[in-house]
Image (cartoon, rainbow, N blue to C red; front, side):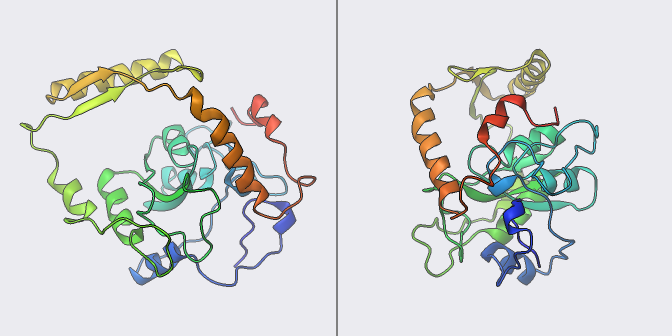
Length: 257
């Protein structure tokens, strides 16, 4: 099957073997419908790679489903499938999840193996899940998670499973301390409509007995090292810069909104 990483340079590339998560998904008996679109090398927050049809948001076709796992999110939101695998370094699962109204989870580093390709982004990216329900997301994470021989780091298997915990829920007597924010210093402030959604969520969490605190760590010192690692990850593909879509296009948000 073709595996292009969203790059026209690799338009005719055929995969030689399965990724570790695909092997686990097949072993679990899931029916795989096909591959979905991603941004070029998973490096952009929208999914409109040159030389390929753009991914569209099924709720409004003039809008983007986000990126880089935009095709996966669009497929789940449109009802083509119940769950989908994605990957996330700087928001490539979480962005498509909020664009398409889904559950999106970026697991902790070492939860899901990168075998056999390996990790080219120094641990900032992981495989994760997109789904319409928390239980579905937990079930897929149970399937994908686990050590594969050769992994440089890994987490122990959960006990009980993610799905078991998701189905049990949290006792009302057990209160969580939850931080929320609508503004990230050095990054920006959320749109008013998004702020209202956050405030409604805060009201719901407080009604369930949780302790909600307006708090956000200062992340400005992380911007430069993240950028360096991100560029290094793209450079590690071995593709010369000339045919790649410049990151400056981020300022224009692509052709989607």
